[in-house]
Image (tube, rainbow, N blue to C red; front, side):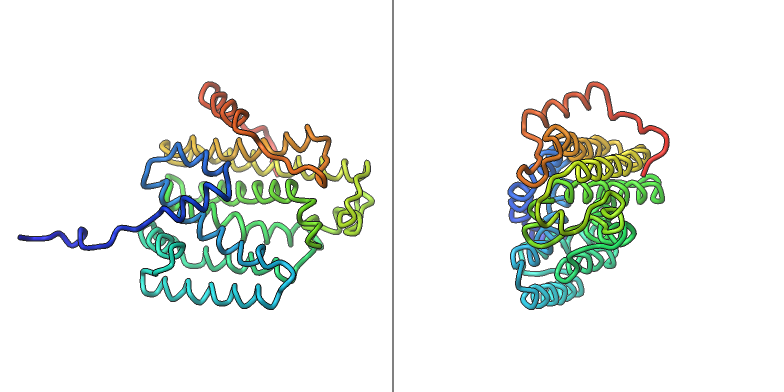
Length: 299
């Protein structure tokens, strides 16, 4: 009896990865349900790797020596798994499988690790160029990895979509988590832009809500929306099977900006989120009317 070689390979277990996204990001988990099973599993694996990498730093805030040790060890274990093509780790094994299957360049996860490590010692940013570099490393490279799994028609435009959407989402994260980050002594807003609005790092760390802060936050919200528009201008290059998923994830995340506005830019005492009923309404609107066409201009 002839046994096919493929059947001898152990199945890759994505349950741990799925649990990671279901607990860590209800928005992304909701959007992932509209993917086919194979792409959904790849999405889970990439998310779990990124989440675990980020948690190594976030869960050990205040202990930079431990954070650096954990990040170095994680990078070493990842590279060993990459060379061997497998791992016993429930996060690394499915991720390595997805990397091999979809030919994800090694530089992307390494760039992510480098970006997460920035949070250990870098608590503030001088300019938006510095912040944009950080956003690229911790968010845009995630999109670039996902694009490999989602079907690409025009690689150049798809990359632009992934990069812009990653920056938009990370800027949204920053706006949503201002209070939480400030409590950890971290401010992501560029110092030169704060100064333009008559603000300082100290104003953010002390949770001072002023009219200058509201004007500043309005500026940052509009910048994030510009990046969402820029990303969606390239969405037609994405495979039709997953175009809706990208549009939905973008719509749900962009809605956080609307919630921030509805909260009167109270970013210290309230953490903006999109509830389930609102997500369902946004999905129905997207199905019925499609994604709004981007206006001229952008970020």
